[in-house]
Image (cartoon, rainbow, N blue to C red; front, side):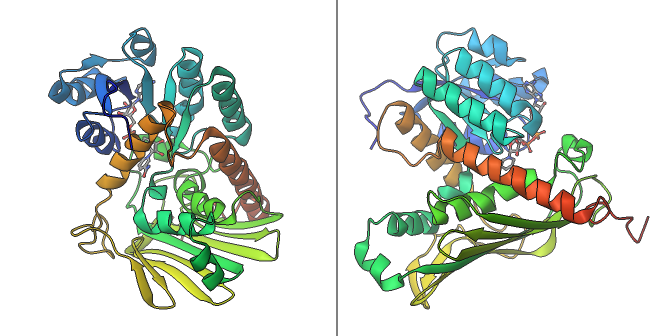
Length: 355
Ligand SMILES: NC(=O)c1ccc[n+]([C@@H]2O[C@H](COP(=O)([O-])OP(=O)(O)OC[C@H]3O[C@@H](n4cnc5c(N)ncnc54)[C@H](O)[C@@H]3O)[C@@H](O)[C@H]2O)c1
């Protein structure tokens, strides 16, 4: 529980684009936790439109926001390539940071940010939004030993399958089209969510072997838009991840194979143990789970921001830390390297039939 007697944390949101609406809505719904001081975007009109409902300042650069003493924390929702430099600038200016996934483009940069935050006693939290989901939280609690009875009932974990397949018909922001195959498209934009869940389940272990295949099916971008990843973990545990931007019938499924049965999250929300329903989503969250936009996600962003404030107040929280993020991005480096090595340049980026 957050201490309601403390004044709300002064927040600046950097990047007022596509996903920012969810962050601004979260800020609006948590007046006891945050006070929006500034909305920042390189596009002044976007900053003004976002700032107006809050009576906040509209600024065009991070530096202007960092010059305001009332800004205690920043939420960074700019294009991926800016995350590391903007997070570093904010940390060096003594501000707590919640940064959208991926925290950085490379594991080395993410680790550098984690060290910087730790050295300064600041919170660096990663926008691994789907951790703030009741089914995922329930699994995290069970695996962390909070429910010894359930853990004993499950037995040992052998394997984990994650499928997160959606349809993005071309670039959702202009910079998606500009990313080179080496920078990665789905492996840097979407894999963080799926692999964060794998890391959550596998605990402190990193995989001993990583194998990835990636391909491009759409012509509106240069990077891969479909990938399959196979991971071997200590203890003979294995994980497979299938992510896609090409599937119009949305599929979001996580299956954990335990010694005594199957734990499954269907449609990203409904948790079942051998068919017994353990968690269902709040009313109205799943309108049409097989359709893009058919599932409400706004409450995750609210929970994420609330947990961030709890973290920077030194209260118990569920924010993924800088170290969690650095391990994740280091894994993504390995996944991207495997995909590139396996493709020998032409499987990720083959000539499309229509080209
Ligand atoms: N957590 C999630 O589920 C989720 C979902 C979508 C996107 N994201 C992440 O959010 C980030 C933003 O994605 P988006 O789709 O909103 O992109 P977007 O391009 O729509 O928005 C980015 C905004 O940043 C602004 N900008 C660019 N350079 C800037 C600078 N130097 N200073 C300030 N503003 C600047 C742009 O003008 C734009 O308005 C990405 O990193 C993406 O991976 C996360």
